[in-house]
Length: 385
Ligand code: MG
Image (cartoon, rainbow, N blue to C red):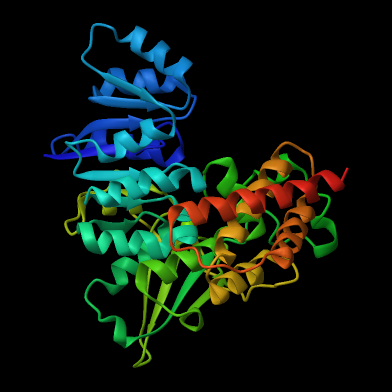
């Protein structure tokens, strides 16, 4: 029996993980849950899975949950330290890291330091602190298995191959809701329109990142750290059907691809059961019903954030931290209708232009750059009124 902790348990990846844990309950037990502020859902999850420890964002919500389960021996903690405690909790074998944004970094690092298997859905932690996470994982023996569908695909293709044989890895992108929208009309798109993703059901932040293709930019940086690939070995193709998740071109001309239904349960389950596989709870992929599979080059005028992310990948040091911080600030501003859709890329570009590169070898340095960059992005957002 493997013991799982789920960080971000009430989000999209979290609820999918718990559905799988329920289906595979003979093999997995849920021992820890960290949620944000969806207390009603967390209470339901505790009733069903009976974990030993849970964490909420605020003390007030934690007190509510403690009161609700006063007859149960349940440890209830809160805040960033609370999520870290759930991550390193004594009993965990696997920590599903699915808190969105840089907020997921400290708990992910906590699980890495404890030497757990990390089923990693929080891509931002590798983007801003890849060098730190990989160094800590080497020391503790922690195993980082990607949950992101494209990276799970690459991971599966590489299972029996040597990295030296790989020529190029291509991540596919659906192109988001505006793939067919003429360039001049994109700027006027509303929050509601940007949140209608054609293929994937995900949280709001990643859905907006998919519409701008920043999600793919962050994934390029994530792939660099996960698989030790150089920027020139990483590429992106638009594939609106989202059936082929990634392609691995070998030096002898063979290309390996991973295909599956567009459902996060498949990569999550693989990260939990690896190196084994378990039966899927989904209908099998029927390519005769999917229809044609299309692939297109990325139009960088339409998706200006992708070349900015590539620049951050190439220059490294603090630039990926600045890219991520400016993007998080801009997406939050867009979601609260303070800026328009096209301004997201403008804010990120102008913030990156102002950025002075420094080494970020410690967590403190990462958070310092993050804080400074957010303040700069916030200034630019204010000027837009
Ligand atoms: Mg992805």
